[in-house]
Picture (cartoon, rainbow, N blue to C red):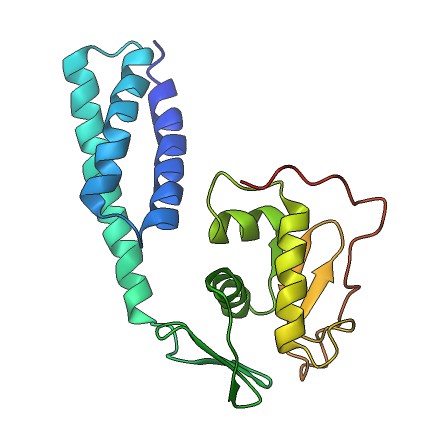
Length: 207
């Protein structure tokens, strides 16, 4: 076993564990996360020729380092809390109470519609890929159900856009995903509402 291989592989492993943790931090605790990954870490080091005692020691060290890093990251997030109400143009969204208003009139959204809109509004101006939207709102097992996502976007547009066929808020980025924009921002151009026909492909069965 090469002594130089462990730091490189270990760094990659750290990044993957941190990414998975940040995706799940609202659903599980520190203990839950490391209980899930502990066997994988042990197997990882054993597969690289480490003796059982050495593998356990490395896994424990990595666990402590990760916990310190995660606490630092989450601590920084607490220093900059999200606004109680997000307002963009004529739209207002309250993530905590799960309420939404258009032109100061409360509008009903289904749970998935709310989660999808909240994710977009929190990332105003950023292009979110189809895969990112599907996995963030529906779960990590999703990613290829493009027509499913388009259906929810169409339903959202009917509820938030003045002219759904000419969206001002949720705009399409061809072949990539969607971007939420402020129509009052002259520097934020809109895009076509649907993908080119050549891009459309049969949607897999929705789970």
